[in-house]
Length: 108
Image (cartoon, rainbow, N blue to C red; front, side, top):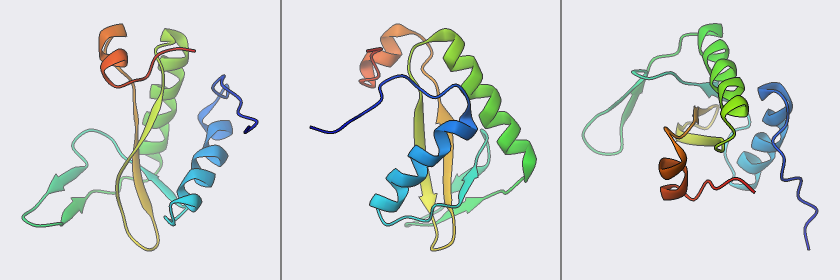
């Protein structure tokens, strides 16, 4: 049996090593570029256009993470797309308990 800590870490910075470990297990880059709404456009075929904003996106991801800790509905790090050098991800928080249930994000 795996020793899994079920409580989310208190900060995004504390949660990132777990996420990076998951990325490594999936053979994705551990360098995470956090995204905000509107940062990704899907083109024809398997192409994505990604706008990189710098520290603004990290601040946004931190705010989303803190908000979800307060709401206690579950936190999901979504991998949107990846290159060999970076993984583009977003912090997803459900709208309400029903949304969390639909996404199998029930609170333990």
